[in-house]
Amino acid sequence: MSRVGKQPIAIPSGVTITLDPDTITVAGSKGTLSLNQLADIAVKNEDGTVTVTRANDEPKVRAKHGLMRSLINNMVVGVSQGFSKQLEVNGVGFRVALAGTDLKMNLGFSHEVIYHLPQGITATVEQNKITISGIDKQQVGQVAAEIRALKKPEPYKGKGIKYSDERIIRKSGKSGKDK
Image (cartoon, rainbow, N blue to C red; front, side, top):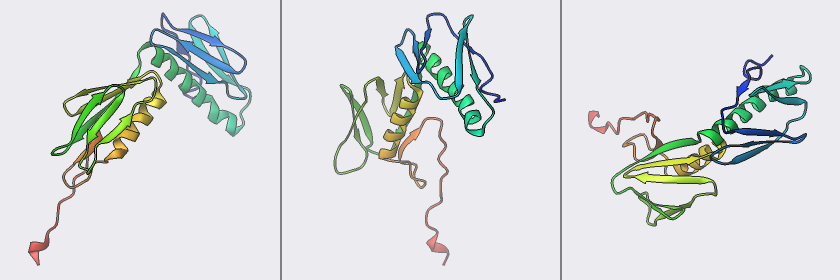
């Protein structure tokens, strides 16, 4: 039995879950998310908790069991609290500004980099920190990864865009004077 899959999901007040034969819809104060039901996985909503069970013990079905429980739990947390990721921009002359739904960034290139935020994602900028937030955990993580990929942090000076909790392992520079 999956250790993750067998845990029940507590539904907080203000969150409603609708179970259809092929979709699961979770609605809360921040918005609504839906998910397609996986084959051979049964979802039940009873007494303020959601339980996920599987039809058999085949390896593919066992793999889907914990996945389905995690996806439903992420939807419940997303519509009630939301998710956020924080990025830091480090480097001399590196700047970030919010223009409507676009992030305008000077990252040491000859041109300004403009990143269009997708629908459902909001960003706030405070000096050199960007906070990406939304209700879909996967989408928040994907947007943060795409912004980080615009200028990954380099190991010599640490210039670039990094997650706020990321630690950059620094390298020493050249050591040519010893010869």
